[in-house]
Image (cartoon, rainbow, N blue to C red):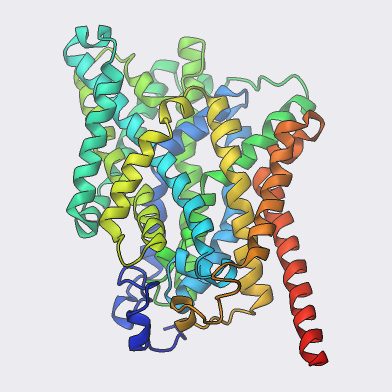
Length: 478
């Protein structure tokens, strides 16, 4: 047992910053062991977007070895901030938006929480669009005339959106019961596609023969940098809200080992399926097809198409709810704890998912890698840098849990906001986004997560040290 927080006083439970969903976990709820965290990463990593991210590297010009190495390296890198942010969750039992109060202030934490929530809303919309696309292709397989209907994709998107909304309204326990079946279903679909690719392409030899499209190392590096940044950015979201899960850990050791075993290996192995199948499409069709739903649409067996699409549909629903609703629901709840509970936060997520127009984010692999993943990494990298600096360097891993739920406590700062954290966030994100405006500094944007993390970490440390020194001199003068 690793939690060291003091018992909650009655005053905490009556605080406007408290609700049961945001409360620290008790001993009875500390039930997750090594297997639980390894299984968590299997269930979250085995999803259509993992396949599509890996496949996009092939479509971007990499060969299979380059793509596998990029995925493995990126996920090994993101494991570091993942484990660092996991520590306070396991030690103190608090979720991400509450932990953010230590560095951003009890109200300023909403800045970090909303940034994280908006990204999750975008991913929710993307997964919902993929599910709608699967429904549309499924209907077109059974009734070929459906594909000629102008608004078929939009109708199916809204239909799948309503299904997601209905599951959310059922509540968190219903969601958890569904999550366990997503990984095996998607793994089965991936293996089916792999078997088809092996048979159609004529074995692994032809499948792996697709060469790199880069003429020299400079060209390769130009694509590698944003691709690696995107791979890190893929899980930059969960590297922030991982305390939402590690707060249930039996011990630090078990959660760390479980994640170290589960994240890089599962992401790399399932990505390998997407990489191999997409490499095979280059041989079979003469072009890389990175969308598995579009690939299934080319199958000649209606039975295989129907079964595969139905499996993708069910699994996408499970992954979408588990990975893209739980965190933003907590984040939106943090905005107004007394009025917004988990279910309401989930409904907000649904509507924001539409507002972010996922059909544009999936328009091409360039939009996904250079646009969506690169842009939000510029904001989430700085948040990670600030939180890690605050917990490990500024506070030396010591938090006053009760004060995280109180106004006028240790984390009140200036009217609930630590403006130094906000400034450090703006400096990190601004530095990374400069690369979009000044072509000669494009590398700053291509490495947006890394640049944002480093700049905000250093800026926050310097600003907090200057604040402490000024407070010390002011006290000494008095």
